[in-house]
Each structure stands twice: as structure tokens, then as C-alpha cells.
Image (cartoon, rainbow, N blue to C red; front, side, top):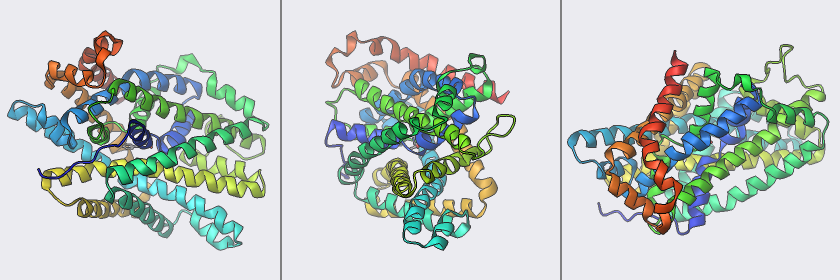
Length: 449
Ligand code: PHE
């Protein structure tokens, strides 16, 4: 192969990079919006259960496959395949994930562009450029083309620099800042009128809704999207971890960070909705349904920031900058999937591969932008509701049925000497073999019927 591979230089570097991939618009925007439109606390409860019981084990399968294979998703899975048939299957699963990552990036870049444009708005307002401020938050094609392109340029820029100087360096700097701001904002919101009612809606579940098919499927999709599963991303990130690391704890830490940040974001957004309602902004229709829909974050938060006066301009700026940053640490992981494949399988130089993949994906973004009313939803549903769960399920099947059991156990033991006495050791191998695939398929079939 002849290409020297990168590696994360430290354990914390990997945790930050993987958490950076996991934490993104899905946590801070997707999760609260889904919670608000799916019965509040009942959704939160189901989400937590699915995240820990299904998404975490599937996540472990992907990072272990990657660390074993020390290569892109296709090569890693082919290394454990013995027959021609298995090798073909490996190709389908690995390449499917790569396509899925590229598709997600094509619409994710548009959404991230919105975040960036909302960060420009307060600057424009501060400088008295009202018309600019209006343009950047108006949903026009021109605005979308401009900000999606800027966002893609940043993503390409970081990935061109490789693992240690690109992915790791930036994730380590930016992630902690975001968590800090989130906590400050929550503390502030809690002092406002209406927050208590919001907390109740967020934390007090209506148990009777827990088994609703739509709620289950949304929660499953959300959990898989949030951990970046089924996209080859965690396989490739796993391949950059050193053989001395304990994967079981690292995996648990990343899952915990991801779920906690989604939970924190809900703690900010749901009470903010009720605060905005108390201030006269229409959030709910008379029948209690949400008026704002997916645009929730753009209705609720700006009105919250406005209530803070001039300070609100700065808070708004900080918030949307950090949202953009969270999106960036996710988008770089999506681009790394296809790029690592091209570099390792086709011996294309890293910088060239990155630039051309970026251009290709941006072209898809443009197609979506010019047909936004139906394409955005179509691509998002195709990739996240179908692509991700199916490919994640196939990764579990792969790790459970094709990967030789001894070799799989050996991989867990690397960096984890006491593995054999752990609960993980006893449960996980058959869990991903049987429970995960069956449960994922069941949720699927349940919702399709
Ligand atoms: N997990 C990211 C988020 O929550 C999105 C993502 C999906 C990243 C798939 C990589 C791959 O925003």
C-alpha cells in the first residue's frame, strides 16, 4: 500500500475527535427538536435506553473492526473475511457506509451553513448593517450557496492536514468551549419565567407513549445518527487508535459524552421554548402541537438572546459560532470516510483526494439547495432513517458472524488485560451477534408496517 497512516497521538485526542464526530447538529438541534415533537420526556427516556442498549454496542463493533483492520472501512472488513462471498459482503457494507457519510455531508453542510449565517447576523447588526443581517438569515438560494460553500471549504481544509494536525488538534480545542457555553446558557435560562414548566415537560415522561412506533423509530434513528453509526466514520476513527488503548472504556466515555451533550442541549432548548411562550412568542398551536417544527432552534433561541439586550448579540454570536464548530468536528469525520478509502485503496494523494471529494459532495449540496423543498428531506431520510440503521446493523452482523470469535476476543483484550473478567466480555459478543441485529430489524419492521 505504501501510504503511511496517521494515528491519534493521545487517548484524549481520540476521545475528543470521536466525541467531536458524535456531537454535532444532531445533539444540539436534532435531539431537542425530536423531543419537542415526540412527546417530550417519553422520547428522552426511550432515547436514553436505545442509546445505551443498542447504539453503544453497535458503536463498539465499529471501532473494534477499525482498530483490528487498521485501515479504511472496506479494507478493514475484508481483512476478516475468508471467502469471496464474505469479501463482497465486506465491500457492500464498507462502501455503503462511505456513500452514506458522503450523502449525510451533502445536506449537513447546508444546515451547518445556516448556523454560520446566524453567527454572522449579530455581527452585522452590531455594525449597523441591517440589510446584511436580514440577508444572511433570509432563506434564499444565494445565502445557502455561499454559506454551504464556506463550510465545505473549512471541512476540506482541516481534512487535508490529516489526523494529528487536523482532526485531533481542532477537536481538542473546540469541544470544551462548546460544553462551557452550553452550561452557562442553561443556568441563565433557569432563572427565567416559564423555565419550570419546560423542565417538567422535559423530565416527566408520559409512560403510555413509550411504545409508539413513530417515537421508537425516531429515537432509534436519532441515537444512531448521534453516534455517527453506519457511516464508516467510527471504523476509520477506530483504525487510528493505538493497540495499547482500552477500547471498552474509551467507547463508553465517548457514548457518555455524546448522550450528555444531547441531554444538556434539551435542558437548554425545551425550557427556552416555554420561556419564549411566556414572553408571547407563539411556539405551540392551540392543540399543543409545535408551530416552529424543525426550525424550532431558529425561533426559540434568537428570541431568548433578544431578551438579553446588547449582551444577547454576543451570546447569540458565541452560540452560533460554537454550533458551527460542533458541526465542523462532525463534518470532518464524514469526509474522512471517503478520503481514507481513496487514499488507501486507490493510492490517491491525500490532498488531492480531499479536494475532489469535497467538490463532489458540494455539487450534491447544490442540487439539494436548488430543489430544497423536497430534496433536503429526501436525502436526509434516505441516509439517516434507512442507510444508517441498516449499515450499522450489517456491521454488527459482520462482527458477530464473520469475524472469527478468537480474533475478536483478542482485539478486545489488547489494551485491556482484565477484559476476561468484565461484563462486557461475557455479554457483548453474543449481544451484537443476536440482540442488536434483531432489535434494530424489529424497530424497522414495526415502523414500516
Ligand atoms: N453525529 C453527528 C451529529 O450528531 C452527525 C454525524 C452523522 C457525523 C454521521 C458523522 C457521521 O451531528
